[in-house]
Image 1 (cartoon, rainbow, N blue to C red):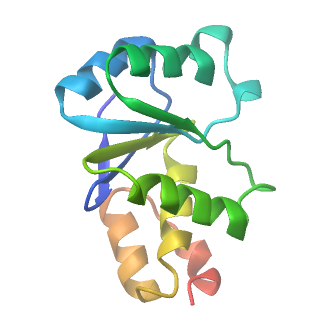
Image 2: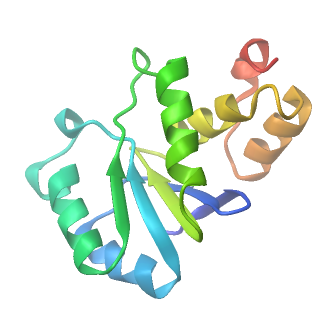
Image 3: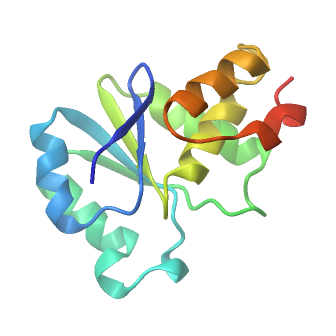
Amino acid sequence: MIPIHIDENYFVSPQISVGDVNLLAEAGFAKIICNRPDDEVSQDLKAEVIGAAAREAGLSFDVLPLTHQTMNAKNIKAQFDLVSEIKGAVLAYCASGTRCAVVWALSQSGSRGANEILQITNNAGYNLEGLRPHLL
């Protein structure tokens, strides 16, 4: 698992395991955000399991499961708030990192132009051109 840098202190990743948590702590991460719903993963990858390992390693851990249906203004703001409230690097993870990149992109709408947002995500390996109409 290699964290993918999106912007400032925000990184995304595909699903992480308990074994990845200490590596993230050693790399200087301060917080992990789980954007993957528990019904998508096996017992050993559920948020409760990863969260316990994160807290044991001294990391802050939050759960904000995102799906197509829950990618709404309230949850976009919630993700932005979770990132903003902490000093240090934040890793958000889901199945592939795409949902975490999408929620970041949507949170930037209004403060950055669509071209800039899409260039940043594209540079990180996420082609989110389909979001353009939603990035005002």
